[in-house]
Image 1: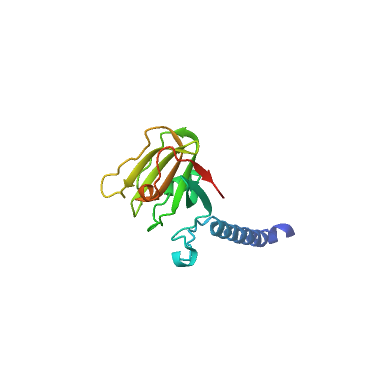
Image 2 (image 1 turned 90 degrees about the horizontal axis):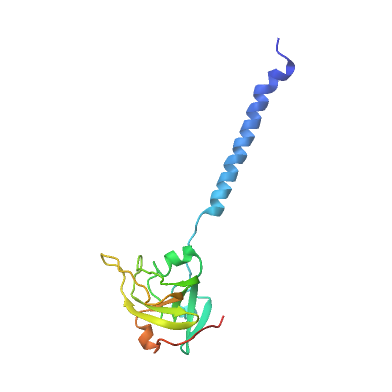
Length: 174
């Protein structure tokens, strides 16, 4: 003869498992929603902001010229850089900041327009690479002649148009 407790055990177990799996599925859906990597597009165009495509929240002075920049401090930011953007204006760029000076290596994966590289050590330009072209077939590697702790990418022609040269100083304004 079965005890009264055992007669209800399958029903209680069914209720418990139903609630448990419902909560588990709900938690997984919530977690997936929070962890989903969304790329936020900036909706204002260059006529509205004067900044073009992207979000440039920092301001620097380089060789007496003002640039509006994004800063790439994390590996994730550094690996994507300016790739995927259609263009940037002549006073925009991306500043890559590294923990230590080294001969940093760059390539043009995912780039849609040519750029100039400004190689910086201790807030001073120490090398320049002009007109780095997007990848067509065989990737080309770009690196400075000397170890650097920062690299500024700007639109191709920017070095000449702004009169930038080795020895110019970098000042982060905001």
